[in-house]
Image 1 (cartoon, rainbow, N blue to C red):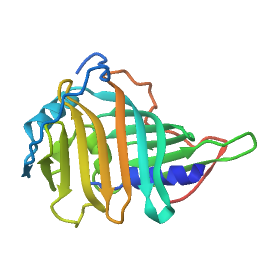
Image 2 (tube, helix red, strand yellow):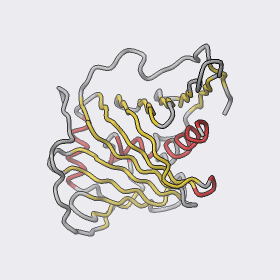
Image 3 (tube, rainbow, N blue to C red):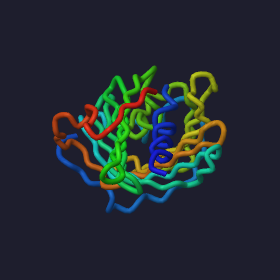
Image 4 (cartoon, one colour):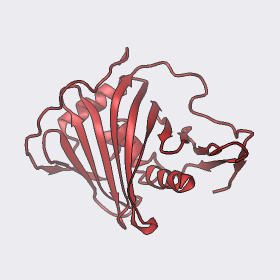
Length: 234
């Protein structure tokens, strides 16, 4: 089950390719109620541009995440995981899964690094490096607040806190069928990103305890092969 979980994270997080001073925790403020206001446009709505501007002023972001993954071909529905995500602009992130099994996914800006530690004493971990191709994955771009990068998507305001993004063309969409974003309009932060892929694969990521501007340790966005792991080629 451990390696199935890790493969799901890699499949659904790494596809679909196309920040302001002191720490700021964003969870306790009640979410603004969503007013229905459907409107599809190629332009990024003003509220999302304001969030993008806030995020762009901070070099770093961290948050606790909970993720739900559905992959019909593997008979997986709503598989849950949780942990921490760390982002350093413009294009580095560390996806640290703690539950139900530990797993680490790092994007260095050029390559994806995957590491699954041993289950117990005597086991071997798994380590791999995969060179990135094309633009950053859609999920990571949206979590970073990089809405302007989704130029090939049509944006629809479902409510004043919920937005849908649909590819204008299936070509170059990385299999993405539709994406949705839920925001906190009062604090101007992203609370949830959901992506549905052709074929029925889905991933939903909810964020809490969001912090901006923290100083990260050197080497957080890289990992050499641990001695207790075997390296696999992708």
